[in-house]
Image (cartoon, rainbow, N blue to C red; front, side):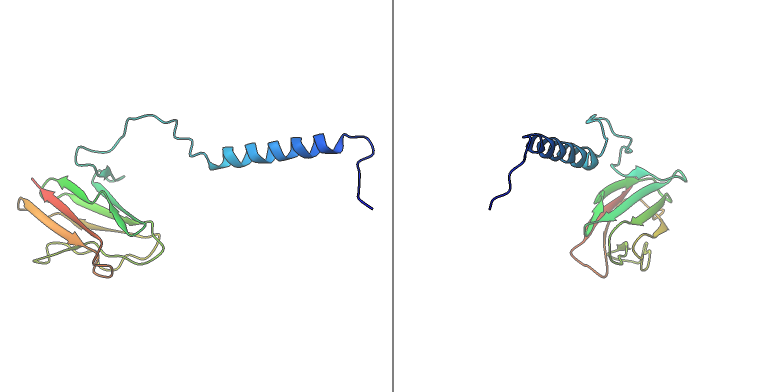
Length: 135
């Protein structure tokens, strides 16, 4: 024998609960960013770190930003927001190398003192690449 609601109110209550759950889910997924187009990133595209240097973030097996410009001798903090260990290593000459950065940790390097373009990569994941420009 099929079940039926005696008063007809239960379907309305179920629909109201479903709407409330959907609304709660949508609000929970919002990043609260407000959709504004401005950014606090520096001219180079890299974020300033708390110490006044430059910050590069590693997430989803990518450097953000992948290309950045800094002054000679600038401090660059690399924050690993990924789920695996990464490095931030100059391609040639050993100009800079963070060594292994565990997930959730950070490391700081000093930019070369001479101007130029310095390609970098992750030694663990060589497909992760970028360019540090010093000028």
